[in-house]
Amino acid sequence: MKNSLLYIVTILFFNVLFSQKKVNNNDFNIQQIINNISLPQIPSYKVSVTQFGAKGDSLTNCKRAFDKAMKACEKRNGGKIIVPKGVYTINGPIHFVSNVELHLEEGAKIRFGSNPKDYPLVLTSWEGTMLYNYSPLIYGNSLKNIAITGSGIIDGEAKDTWIQWKPFEENDKQLSREMNHKSTPIKERVFGEGHFLRPQLIQFVNSKNILIEGVKIEDSPFWCVHLLKSKSITLRGIRYNAQNNNNDGLDIEYSSDVLIENIQFNNSDDNIAIKAGRDTEGRSNTTMPSENIVIKNCEFKGLHALVIGSEMSAGVRNVYVNNCRAIGYLKRGIYIKTNSDRGGYIKDIYVTNIDFGEVEDCIYMTSNYHGEGSGLFPSKITDISISNISCIAASNAGIVIEGNPTSKVENITLDNITIKSAKNGMTLINTKNVLFNEVVIGEKQGVPSSVH
Figure 1 (cartoon, rainbow, N blue to C red):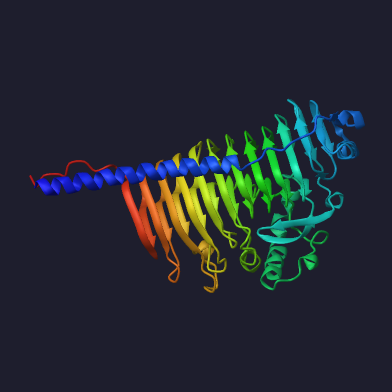
Figure 2: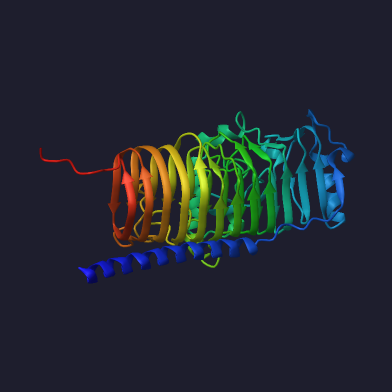
């Protein structure tokens, strides 16, 4: 009896030590990622868009004034462009140059026109495939030290314009995917006039030392903020009211060293989506996974809170999510998705301390997204730790983990998960080494009932 008790105490002691070591390692790794991120260095030169003729009367086209302000900063190797209180209409995109901060003061609003002819073709990406399409409304390529700050509003003005393209985009979406699968040279993937792929609101490509802070984002044509093939990114204090189709809040793709914190999401699609290219093209970019991403202290509201995939073919790894909460209904809380056309991997994901309210599904991992996939390129989902999660109710499933028969989901740890009610408590298919501790779905069981 004495030896048995000693054995149990020893096991518990080592479990506690292991758990504490893991927490400490995660804290260390998070701090290392944050330490590797550089905020943009902006020269002291300042200009106001009003110096170049911009009028905040909501009627005047301020495109030339914003272009001139950007040019003035470029001549001085950078600077700060101030947008004072007022409503500024811009018929065409804002194209950034390096070492520039666009600052929207309290009461300032930028609203973009929606004539496609005002938006030249640029190198961009659409749902994981590189191509040439209408310029995102705010855009930059191959830049460093860029920032969008302040408390003003960036309005895509899309609800009555760009969004009308949604029913017509299917042929172009399939064409882009066919070009991806056939490795069509990117210079030949030209969309734009005669096509119906909506542009993103804000997109920076091949850039580094990026800051977006404080602004409110509304009414985007497509994804709201898309960071593509970029690194050293800080996204904090952003607010959203973006209710159009495909209005993802943040899409992080082929990007690394990212801090996302204190963001108030209110999006009709994914709040945060971490991606890494699609299918053939993504698998050819394995040196550019999305990695080293820290997400903390955010408020989720919309369709899905945290999403990884489904475009993740170059791989997603080293993602840390901590101390977030949902306000209002979500379709899914934690959603990891891929299919057997993607390939690639999702690994080393650590999610802890999240409070969800009512959802359709609380935790959902699937290798069978939309039931699609040829079976030739199954993805690998492995080494996922999810802990300290609470959920009031799941109208469908509490926990779903669904692997591929030839590539099982494995090494999953679920610790201290409480889901007060769920239609389907748990479904595990094609999994290996799934560990549970303190997982309660439904009413917590107490003392067993007596036979009398």
